[in-house]
Image (cartoon, rainbow, N blue to C red):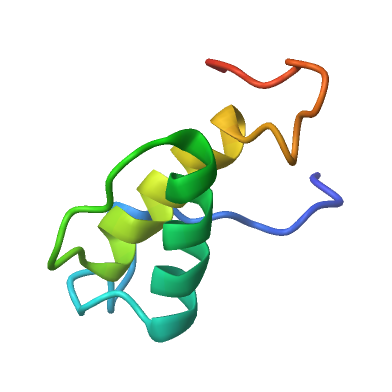
Length: 71
């Protein structure tokens, strides 16, 4: 039994195909700027969530000593 929150795959979200939320877009743009990446237009909630996860892994702010990277 897990003690942590249950994470559902974004592809399985009932609202995953809806446009990303304003908070998702704001956070995604911040992460992308820090990572030197671009944010494609028209992302869904699920796509934005996946890109946020990817960019968090590359973030120098979240992993200041180069501890980030591919998981």
